[in-house]
Length: 144
Image (cartoon, rainbow, N blue to C red; front, top):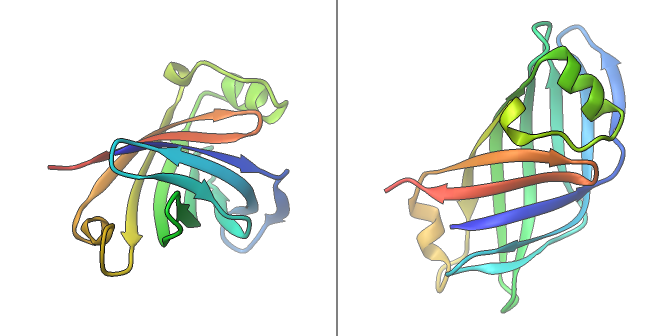
C-alpha cells in the first residue's frame, strides 16, 4: 500500500512500572507514499512502547496522516520488535542496524472519512519495519 517513515524525538522514559518498562515515542513528522495514497504524518502522533522482561518491545501507536489532497486519516497499530541483545545495544546507541537482524512487525488499522480514502476502513494490513536512528520505516501491505 505504502512506505511510511516517521521522525521520532528521543523517547520519554517512564521506566519500570508495575507492568513493563514504559517509554513514549513522540512522532514529530513523517511521510508516506504509495500508488493510491501519499502525504505527511502530523506532529502530535505517538507510540506507547512497552519493554518486556524477555527483551521484546511492544508498540501501541496512534498516527495522524494528512494526504496530499488534505484529507486527515487516523492510523493505529500494534506491533512487536524483538532482537538479540547485541543488536539492541547498537540500536540504543543510535546506530543503524541491518533490518534482517531482528523481527519488527505491525498490524495497522485506519479510520478515514467517507469518500476517496474510505477503502482504508475495510481492510486488514500488515507492516514490516526497520529502525533508523531518526525513527522507524514501515512497508505496509494490504491483506487481500
